[in-house]
Amino acid sequence: MKLIKRILIIDDRDQENVLDQIHAALGKEFDLHTKFVHTTKPQYRQNDSVKLDFEKLKNAIVDAYSQEGWFELVLTDFDLNEKGNVDGLDVVEYIKSIHLTAPIMMYSGNFSDAVKKIVKTEGTLNDQQVAEAVTKLVGYNIQFPKRNDYRTEAINYLRGEKEISLRNEFLKLLYEHKDMEFNSCYPNFAGKKFDEIARMLENNSDSRSEEWMLALIQQTVAYLVKINEL
Image (cartoon, rainbow, N blue to C red):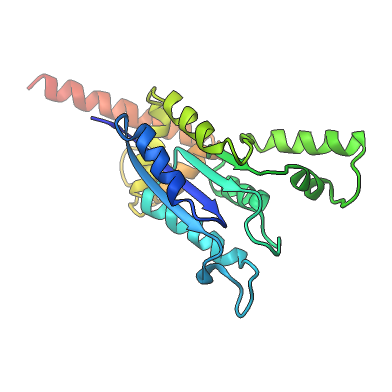
């Protein structure tokens, strides 16, 4: 059985050729699920404008996650529309706000624009501004391939992620069944939806989530012991 690898690409240029290349390179190794948000399409624009509507773009990202539950890799261009009112940094910050551990690559042909946005300057950068930008970029915990290298970087990254992470697989299952409510062995989480619990686990936002996992493990082992004695 092949591992599933889910990929989300956000770009203002057609990426079908890139997706075909990824499928050609990895299709024999993995079961690939791909989503492409083409930001120049009319449904993502502000009314009667060529500018991106960030709310519509965020809704598209949420829809993609709702359909797939999880993405092993998100790829986004820095330049998402010619007017520049929304860019890859906005996308990174939004995705990290809903999925802190999401693996993301943001590619660009010119990262100086990204750096200038971070330090809020249009002029020449001084050493302090560069240091501030680097610190913030590192804090995003993402990778920064060049535009002409990102498909190769994506293929190499996915190919290198062959070991199963039980925690990640657990999160994926919770997100895939996100609307179900928990009503079992841990009363503190009774009535919480699966995606709410998954977000606690992913963001380490509630120490009780670890207790909840332990309760599930204990219940699972007890069940295995019981059926093994039949």
